[in-house]
Image (cartoon, rainbow, N blue to C red; front, side, top):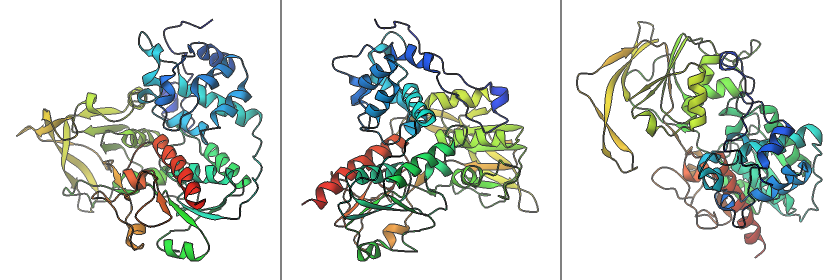
Length: 460
Protein backbone atom coordinates (compact mmCIF):
# COMPACT_ATOMS: atom_id res chain seq x y z
CA UNK A 1 0.00 0.00 0.00
CA UNK A 2 1.31 3.43 -0.94
CA UNK A 3 2.52 5.83 1.71
CA UNK A 4 0.16 8.82 1.35
CA UNK A 5 2.39 11.18 3.30
CA UNK A 6 1.86 14.59 1.64
CA UNK A 7 5.41 15.88 2.02
CA UNK A 8 8.82 14.51 1.10
CA UNK A 9 10.78 12.64 3.72
CA UNK A 10 13.11 15.39 5.01
CA UNK A 11 16.75 15.24 3.94
CA UNK A 12 19.21 15.30 6.88
CA UNK A 13 21.69 18.16 6.63
CA UNK A 14 24.27 20.07 8.64
CA UNK A 15 23.03 23.05 10.66
CA UNK A 16 23.52 26.33 8.75
CA UNK A 17 25.76 27.95 11.39
CA UNK A 18 27.99 24.88 11.33
CA UNK A 19 28.20 24.13 7.62
CA UNK A 20 28.99 27.71 6.58
CA UNK A 21 32.38 27.24 8.25
CA UNK A 22 33.32 23.97 6.54
CA UNK A 23 33.38 22.35 3.10
CA UNK A 24 31.78 19.06 4.15
CA UNK A 25 28.68 18.00 2.24
CA UNK A 26 25.62 19.99 3.35
CA UNK A 27 23.04 17.24 2.81
CA UNK A 28 24.11 14.02 4.48
CA UNK A 29 21.73 11.67 2.66
CA UNK A 30 18.83 9.35 3.48
CA UNK A 31 19.20 6.36 5.73
CA UNK A 32 17.82 3.07 4.35
CA UNK A 33 14.70 3.51 6.49
CA UNK A 34 14.12 7.03 5.14
CA UNK A 35 14.64 5.87 1.55
CA UNK A 36 12.16 3.01 1.88
CA UNK A 37 9.60 5.34 3.47
CA UNK A 38 9.97 7.87 0.65
CA UNK A 39 9.91 5.17 -2.05
CA UNK A 40 6.55 3.97 -0.78
CA UNK A 41 5.10 7.39 -1.63
CA UNK A 42 5.42 6.50 -5.34
CA UNK A 43 2.11 5.44 -6.89
CA UNK A 44 3.87 3.44 -9.66
CA UNK A 45 1.78 5.14 -12.37
CA UNK A 46 0.85 3.13 -15.47
CA UNK A 47 1.94 6.11 -17.59
CA UNK A 48 4.90 7.53 -15.65
CA UNK A 49 5.24 11.17 -16.70
CA UNK A 50 8.34 11.47 -14.51
CA UNK A 51 10.34 9.39 -17.01
CA UNK A 52 9.42 11.81 -19.79
CA UNK A 53 10.85 14.62 -17.68
CA UNK A 54 14.24 12.92 -17.35
CA UNK A 55 16.87 13.85 -20.00
CA UNK A 56 18.48 10.38 -19.70
CA UNK A 57 15.20 8.45 -19.37
CA UNK A 58 15.86 6.76 -16.04
CA UNK A 59 13.21 4.06 -15.43
CA UNK A 60 12.06 5.93 -12.34
CA UNK A 61 9.04 3.96 -11.04
CA UNK A 62 10.93 0.69 -11.54
CA UNK A 63 13.96 1.69 -9.48
CA UNK A 64 11.79 3.29 -6.79
CA UNK A 65 9.78 0.07 -6.51
CA UNK A 66 13.03 -1.81 -5.87
CA UNK A 67 13.93 0.69 -3.13
CA UNK A 68 10.51 0.14 -1.55
CA UNK A 69 11.25 -3.60 -1.57
CA UNK A 70 14.69 -2.90 -0.02
CA UNK A 71 16.36 -4.36 -3.12
CA UNK A 72 18.94 -1.60 -3.41
CA UNK A 73 21.17 -3.58 -5.75
CA UNK A 74 18.27 -4.10 -8.13
CA UNK A 75 17.50 -0.38 -7.97
CA UNK A 76 21.11 0.46 -8.85
CA UNK A 77 21.09 -1.88 -11.85
CA UNK A 78 17.90 -0.28 -13.17
CA UNK A 79 19.22 3.28 -12.79
CA UNK A 80 22.57 2.55 -14.39
CA UNK A 81 20.97 0.88 -17.39
CA UNK A 82 20.34 4.43 -18.66
CA UNK A 83 22.28 6.77 -16.32
CA UNK A 84 26.05 6.38 -16.07
CA UNK A 85 26.48 8.91 -13.24
CA UNK A 86 23.63 8.57 -10.69
CA UNK A 87 25.67 9.74 -7.68
CA UNK A 88 26.29 12.99 -9.53
CA UNK A 89 22.86 13.62 -11.04
CA UNK A 90 21.18 12.67 -7.76
CA UNK A 91 23.01 15.59 -6.15
CA UNK A 92 23.09 18.37 -8.73
CA UNK A 93 20.26 17.66 -11.19
CA UNK A 94 17.34 20.18 -11.01
CA UNK A 95 14.75 17.48 -10.44
CA UNK A 96 12.19 20.07 -9.38
CA UNK A 97 11.88 21.31 -12.98
CA UNK A 98 12.24 17.90 -14.66
CA UNK A 99 11.17 14.49 -13.35
CA UNK A 100 9.66 15.70 -10.06
CA UNK A 101 7.79 18.49 -11.86
CA UNK A 102 5.74 15.82 -13.63
CA UNK A 103 5.11 13.60 -10.58
CA UNK A 104 1.37 13.26 -9.86
CA UNK A 105 2.03 13.34 -6.12
CA UNK A 106 2.98 16.98 -6.61
CA UNK A 107 -0.58 17.94 -7.58
CA UNK A 108 -1.90 17.92 -4.00
CA UNK A 109 1.34 17.83 -2.07
CA UNK A 110 5.05 17.43 -2.67
CA UNK A 111 6.34 15.14 -5.45
CA UNK A 112 8.27 11.99 -4.67
CA UNK A 113 11.90 12.88 -3.84
CA UNK A 114 13.27 11.17 -6.96
CA UNK A 115 16.67 12.86 -6.81
CA UNK A 116 17.20 11.99 -3.16
CA UNK A 117 16.32 8.36 -3.84
CA UNK A 118 18.67 8.22 -6.83
CA UNK A 119 21.47 9.61 -4.68
CA UNK A 120 20.71 7.11 -1.90
CA UNK A 121 20.91 4.16 -4.29
CA UNK A 122 24.19 5.35 -5.83
CA UNK A 123 25.71 6.02 -2.42
CA UNK A 124 24.55 2.65 -1.09
CA UNK A 125 26.25 0.91 -4.00
CA UNK A 126 29.50 2.84 -3.59
CA UNK A 127 29.61 2.25 0.18
CA UNK A 128 28.53 -1.40 0.16
CA UNK A 129 29.55 -2.92 -3.20
CA UNK A 130 31.56 -0.60 -5.48
CA UNK A 131 32.68 -3.41 -7.74
CA UNK A 132 34.63 -2.02 -10.66
CA UNK A 133 33.12 -3.00 -14.03
CA UNK A 134 34.95 -5.39 -16.35
CA UNK A 135 36.37 -4.23 -19.65
CA UNK A 136 33.98 -5.18 -22.47
CA UNK A 137 35.30 -7.11 -25.45
CA UNK A 138 36.98 -4.62 -27.77
CA UNK A 139 35.81 -3.99 -31.32
CA UNK A 140 39.18 -2.38 -32.09
CA UNK A 141 37.72 0.98 -33.11
CA UNK A 142 39.20 4.08 -31.48
CA UNK A 143 37.07 7.09 -30.48
CA UNK A 144 38.40 10.31 -28.93
CA UNK A 145 36.43 12.28 -26.33
CA UNK A 146 37.50 15.88 -25.74
CA UNK A 147 36.66 16.99 -22.20
CA UNK A 148 35.87 14.94 -19.10
CA UNK A 149 32.85 16.81 -17.82
CA UNK A 150 29.37 15.22 -17.60
CA UNK A 151 28.90 15.08 -21.39
CA UNK A 152 32.32 13.53 -22.01
CA UNK A 153 32.11 11.02 -19.15
CA UNK A 154 28.66 9.86 -20.24
CA UNK A 155 29.64 9.56 -23.90
CA UNK A 156 32.82 7.66 -22.99
CA UNK A 157 30.94 5.29 -20.70
CA UNK A 158 28.28 4.41 -23.27
CA UNK A 159 30.86 3.88 -26.02
CA UNK A 160 33.11 1.76 -23.80
CA UNK A 161 30.17 -0.49 -22.95
CA UNK A 162 29.75 -1.08 -26.70
CA UNK A 163 33.38 -2.18 -27.04
CA UNK A 164 34.99 0.98 -28.44
CA UNK A 165 38.55 1.91 -27.45
CA UNK A 166 37.89 5.32 -25.92
CA UNK A 167 40.46 7.96 -25.00
CA UNK A 168 39.48 11.07 -23.03
CA UNK A 169 41.57 14.22 -23.50
CA UNK A 170 41.19 16.59 -20.53
CA UNK A 171 42.74 20.09 -20.53
CA UNK A 172 43.12 20.34 -16.74
CA UNK A 173 45.28 18.21 -14.44
CA UNK A 174 42.29 16.36 -12.96
CA UNK A 175 39.44 14.62 -14.78
CA UNK A 176 35.87 15.71 -14.13
CA UNK A 177 35.49 19.05 -15.87
CA UNK A 178 32.93 21.35 -14.24
CA UNK A 179 32.18 18.59 -11.73
CA UNK A 180 35.58 19.19 -10.10
CA UNK A 181 36.40 22.83 -10.87
CA UNK A 182 32.94 24.39 -10.73
CA UNK A 183 30.74 22.58 -8.21
CA UNK A 184 31.91 22.99 -4.60
CA UNK A 185 32.90 20.09 -2.36
CA UNK A 186 29.94 20.78 -0.05
CA UNK A 187 27.53 20.03 -2.91
CA UNK A 188 29.48 17.32 -4.73
CA UNK A 189 32.42 15.62 -2.96
CA UNK A 190 35.29 15.17 -5.38
CA UNK A 191 35.95 11.60 -4.19
CA UNK A 192 32.62 10.66 -5.78
CA UNK A 193 33.68 12.11 -9.14
CA UNK A 194 37.03 10.32 -8.83
CA UNK A 195 35.25 7.03 -8.23
CA UNK A 196 33.25 7.44 -11.45
CA UNK A 197 36.47 8.11 -13.38
CA UNK A 198 37.99 4.91 -11.91
CA UNK A 199 34.98 2.95 -13.23
CA UNK A 200 35.62 4.30 -16.71
CA UNK A 201 39.28 3.34 -16.51
CA UNK A 202 38.27 -0.16 -15.39
CA UNK A 203 36.23 -0.40 -18.61
CA UNK A 204 39.38 0.39 -20.59
CA UNK A 205 38.89 4.12 -21.11
CA UNK A 206 42.21 5.98 -21.25
CA UNK A 207 42.08 9.30 -19.39
CA UNK A 208 44.80 11.76 -20.41
CA UNK A 209 45.06 15.03 -18.47
CA UNK A 210 46.90 18.27 -19.32
CA UNK A 211 45.85 17.71 -22.94
CA UNK A 212 44.57 20.98 -24.39
CA UNK A 213 43.02 20.03 -27.70
CA UNK A 214 43.71 22.87 -30.11
CA UNK A 215 47.15 23.40 -28.58
CA UNK A 216 48.80 20.08 -27.72
CA UNK A 217 46.92 18.25 -30.47
CA UNK A 218 44.41 19.36 -33.06
CA UNK A 219 41.21 17.56 -34.05
CA UNK A 220 42.83 16.73 -37.40
CA UNK A 221 45.82 15.17 -35.63
CA UNK A 222 43.48 12.95 -33.59
CA UNK A 223 42.16 11.48 -36.84
CA UNK A 224 45.73 11.04 -38.10
CA UNK A 225 46.46 9.06 -34.91
CA UNK A 226 43.80 6.51 -35.86
CA UNK A 227 40.66 7.77 -34.12
CA UNK A 228 37.59 7.13 -36.27
CA UNK A 229 35.31 9.64 -34.52
CA UNK A 230 35.70 12.54 -32.10
CA UNK A 231 33.23 13.79 -29.49
CA UNK A 232 33.71 17.39 -28.32
CA UNK A 233 32.39 17.90 -24.79
CA UNK A 234 34.71 20.75 -23.84
CA UNK A 235 32.06 22.73 -21.97
CA UNK A 236 31.64 26.48 -21.74
CA UNK A 237 34.55 27.85 -19.76
CA UNK A 238 34.92 31.35 -21.21
CA UNK A 239 33.58 33.82 -18.60
CA UNK A 240 31.53 36.89 -19.43
CA UNK A 241 32.06 40.33 -17.90
CA UNK A 242 29.98 43.53 -17.72
CA UNK A 243 32.62 45.77 -19.31
CA UNK A 244 32.19 48.39 -16.61
CA UNK A 245 35.01 50.56 -15.17
CA UNK A 246 37.15 48.80 -12.57
CA UNK A 247 36.81 45.19 -13.73
CA UNK A 248 40.60 44.94 -14.11
CA UNK A 249 41.25 45.83 -10.45
CA UNK A 250 42.82 43.38 -8.03
CA UNK A 251 40.13 41.51 -6.18
CA UNK A 252 37.83 41.17 -9.19
CA UNK A 253 37.36 37.56 -10.30
CA UNK A 254 35.24 35.67 -12.75
CA UNK A 255 33.21 33.03 -10.93
CA UNK A 256 35.06 30.41 -12.99
CA UNK A 257 38.45 31.50 -11.66
CA UNK A 258 37.23 31.89 -8.09
CA UNK A 259 35.57 28.47 -8.03
CA UNK A 260 38.51 26.78 -9.79
CA UNK A 261 40.93 28.14 -7.19
CA UNK A 262 38.59 27.09 -4.40
CA UNK A 263 37.42 23.68 -5.63
CA UNK A 264 39.97 22.16 -7.99
CA UNK A 265 43.02 23.82 -6.41
CA UNK A 266 41.58 23.48 -2.88
CA UNK A 267 42.27 27.00 -1.63
CA UNK A 268 40.11 26.23 1.42
CA UNK A 269 42.75 23.85 2.82
CA UNK A 270 45.39 25.36 5.11
CA UNK A 271 48.15 23.41 3.40
CA UNK A 272 47.13 24.64 -0.06
CA UNK A 273 49.52 27.02 -1.81
CA UNK A 274 46.78 28.29 -4.12
CA UNK A 275 46.54 32.08 -3.80
CA UNK A 276 43.10 33.50 -3.10
CA UNK A 277 42.24 36.80 -1.44
CA UNK A 278 41.03 36.49 2.14
CA UNK A 279 38.09 38.86 1.86
CA UNK A 280 36.02 40.66 4.48
CA UNK A 281 33.16 41.81 2.25
CA UNK A 282 32.35 40.07 -1.03
CA UNK A 283 29.87 40.84 -3.81
CA UNK A 284 28.79 38.22 -6.33
CA UNK A 285 27.15 39.70 -9.43
CA UNK A 286 24.54 37.33 -10.88
CA UNK A 287 21.66 35.14 -9.75
CA UNK A 288 22.29 31.65 -11.10
CA UNK A 289 23.48 28.44 -9.46
CA UNK A 290 27.11 29.42 -10.06
CA UNK A 291 26.53 32.69 -8.20
CA UNK A 292 25.12 30.74 -5.24
CA UNK A 293 28.15 28.42 -5.29
CA UNK A 294 30.58 31.35 -5.32
CA UNK A 295 28.72 33.16 -2.54
CA UNK A 296 28.63 30.10 -0.30
CA UNK A 297 32.34 29.44 -0.94
CA UNK A 298 33.21 33.03 -0.03
CA UNK A 299 31.35 32.67 3.25
CA UNK A 300 33.22 29.47 4.06
CA UNK A 301 36.52 31.14 3.20
CA UNK A 302 35.93 33.61 6.02
CA UNK A 303 34.09 36.60 4.57
CA UNK A 304 31.97 38.46 7.13
CA UNK A 305 29.47 39.84 4.61
CA UNK A 306 28.62 38.19 1.30
CA UNK A 307 26.19 39.89 -1.08
CA UNK A 308 24.44 38.43 -4.12
CA UNK A 309 23.78 41.40 -6.40
CA UNK A 310 21.14 40.71 -9.04
CA UNK A 311 19.46 43.18 -11.37
CA UNK A 312 16.04 41.50 -11.33
CA UNK A 313 13.85 40.42 -8.42
CA UNK A 314 14.18 37.26 -6.37
CA UNK A 315 11.27 35.64 -8.24
CA UNK A 316 13.25 35.96 -11.50
CA UNK A 317 16.45 34.40 -10.16
CA UNK A 318 17.50 31.40 -12.29
CA UNK A 319 19.19 29.61 -9.37
CA UNK A 320 17.49 26.53 -7.95
CA UNK A 321 15.19 27.35 -5.04
CA UNK A 322 17.07 24.83 -2.92
CA UNK A 323 20.35 26.66 -3.56
CA UNK A 324 18.78 30.03 -2.74
CA UNK A 325 17.30 28.58 0.44
CA UNK A 326 20.62 27.09 1.57
CA UNK A 327 22.44 30.36 0.79
CA UNK A 328 20.03 32.43 2.87
CA UNK A 329 20.28 29.96 5.75
CA UNK A 330 24.06 30.35 5.65
CA UNK A 331 23.87 34.13 5.98
CA UNK A 332 24.22 35.25 2.35
CA UNK A 333 22.64 38.69 1.83
CA UNK A 334 20.50 39.10 -1.31
CA UNK A 335 20.66 42.52 -2.97
CA UNK A 336 18.05 42.18 -5.70
CA UNK A 337 16.91 44.87 -8.14
CA UNK A 338 20.44 46.29 -8.08
CA UNK A 339 22.95 46.55 -10.91
CA UNK A 340 26.68 47.46 -10.71
CA UNK A 341 27.82 50.51 -12.65
CA UNK A 342 31.52 50.57 -11.69
CA UNK A 343 34.05 49.06 -9.30
CA UNK A 344 36.02 51.46 -7.15
CA UNK A 345 39.72 51.03 -6.43
CA UNK A 346 42.44 52.48 -4.20
CA UNK A 347 45.83 53.90 -5.17
CA UNK A 348 47.27 50.37 -5.26
CA UNK A 349 44.76 49.16 -7.84
CA UNK A 350 42.80 47.16 -5.27
CA UNK A 351 39.00 46.96 -5.26
CA UNK A 352 37.47 48.82 -2.29
CA UNK A 353 33.82 49.16 -3.31
CA UNK A 354 31.20 48.71 -5.99
CA UNK A 355 28.84 51.43 -7.15
CA UNK A 356 25.35 50.13 -7.94
CA UNK A 357 22.07 51.58 -9.15
CA UNK A 358 18.65 50.40 -8.06
CA UNK A 359 16.37 48.86 -10.67
CA UNK A 360 12.67 48.33 -11.30
CA UNK A 361 11.02 45.78 -13.57
CA UNK A 362 9.37 46.87 -16.79
CA UNK A 363 7.73 44.88 -19.58
CA UNK A 364 8.98 41.35 -20.47
CA UNK A 365 12.00 41.18 -22.79
CA UNK A 366 12.91 38.57 -25.43
CA UNK A 367 13.67 36.02 -22.69
CA UNK A 368 10.14 36.35 -21.31
CA UNK A 369 11.36 37.91 -18.07
CA UNK A 370 10.49 41.48 -17.09
CA UNK A 371 13.17 43.89 -18.25
CA UNK A 372 15.13 45.68 -15.50
CA UNK A 373 15.16 49.48 -15.78
CA UNK A 374 17.55 51.74 -13.86
CA UNK A 375 16.00 54.21 -11.41
CA UNK A 376 17.65 57.56 -12.04
CA UNK A 377 19.44 59.04 -9.04
CA UNK A 378 19.34 55.84 -6.96
CA UNK A 379 23.08 55.10 -7.00
CA UNK A 380 24.76 53.77 -3.87
CA UNK A 381 28.12 52.22 -2.97
CA UNK A 382 28.51 48.71 -1.57
CA UNK A 383 31.56 48.39 0.68
CA UNK A 384 33.33 45.30 -0.70
CA UNK A 385 36.93 44.24 -1.22
CA UNK A 386 36.22 41.37 -3.61
CA UNK A 387 33.86 41.24 -6.61
CA UNK A 388 33.00 37.98 -8.36
CA UNK A 389 31.37 38.22 -11.77
CA UNK A 390 28.92 35.35 -12.32
CA UNK A 391 27.24 36.42 -15.54
CA UNK A 392 27.43 33.19 -17.48
CA UNK A 393 29.98 31.58 -19.76
CA UNK A 394 30.38 30.75 -23.43
CA UNK A 395 32.31 27.99 -25.22
CA UNK A 396 36.06 28.56 -25.48
CA UNK A 397 36.93 29.46 -29.10
CA UNK A 398 40.18 27.43 -29.10
CA UNK A 399 38.84 24.25 -30.73
CA UNK A 400 36.71 25.98 -33.34
CA UNK A 401 39.55 28.36 -34.25
CA UNK A 402 41.97 25.46 -34.86
CA UNK A 403 39.58 23.14 -36.68
CA UNK A 404 38.76 24.02 -40.32
CA UNK A 405 35.15 23.44 -41.29
CA UNK A 406 33.81 23.49 -37.73
CA UNK A 407 30.94 26.00 -37.71
CA UNK A 408 29.45 27.76 -34.70
CA UNK A 409 26.41 29.90 -33.93
CA UNK A 410 26.48 33.57 -32.88
CA UNK A 411 27.10 32.64 -29.24
CA UNK A 412 30.08 30.42 -30.08
CA UNK A 413 28.30 27.10 -29.65
CA UNK A 414 29.14 24.33 -32.10
CA UNK A 415 26.43 23.72 -34.68
CA UNK A 416 25.20 20.11 -34.67
CA UNK A 417 22.51 18.17 -36.51
CA UNK A 418 19.86 15.90 -34.98
CA UNK A 419 22.50 13.19 -34.46
CA UNK A 420 24.80 15.63 -32.63
CA UNK A 421 27.28 15.63 -35.54
CA UNK A 422 28.99 18.94 -36.24
CA UNK A 423 29.67 20.41 -39.66
CA UNK A 424 32.79 18.20 -39.79
CA UNK A 425 32.34 14.54 -40.79
CA UNK A 426 32.70 12.16 -37.81
CA UNK A 427 33.11 15.05 -35.34
CA UNK A 428 30.28 15.09 -32.81
CA UNK A 429 29.59 17.48 -29.95
CA UNK A 430 27.25 17.94 -27.02
CA UNK A 431 26.69 19.67 -23.70
CA UNK A 432 27.73 23.24 -22.98
CA UNK A 433 30.08 23.30 -26.00
CA UNK A 434 26.89 23.32 -28.08
CA UNK A 435 24.23 24.95 -25.89
CA UNK A 436 26.31 27.30 -23.76
CA UNK A 437 26.16 26.93 -19.98
CA UNK A 438 23.34 24.57 -18.97
CA UNK A 439 22.74 21.80 -16.43
CA UNK A 440 24.78 18.69 -15.71
CA UNK A 441 21.92 16.35 -16.58
CA UNK A 442 21.30 18.01 -19.97
CA UNK A 443 25.00 17.58 -20.76
CA UNK A 444 24.74 13.92 -19.76
CA UNK A 445 21.73 13.52 -22.04
CA UNK A 446 23.69 15.05 -24.92
CA UNK A 447 26.65 12.73 -24.27
CA UNK A 448 24.33 9.74 -24.24
CA UNK A 449 22.65 10.76 -27.50
CA UNK A 450 26.01 11.43 -29.16
CA UNK A 451 27.37 8.01 -28.14
CA UNK A 452 24.42 6.31 -29.84
CA UNK A 453 24.92 8.47 -32.93
CA UNK A 454 28.66 7.71 -33.07
CA UNK A 455 27.94 4.01 -32.81
CA UNK A 456 25.41 4.21 -35.65
CA UNK A 457 27.76 6.31 -37.79
CA UNK A 458 30.71 3.92 -37.37
CA UNK A 459 28.57 0.91 -38.21
CA UNK A 460 27.51 2.28 -41.59
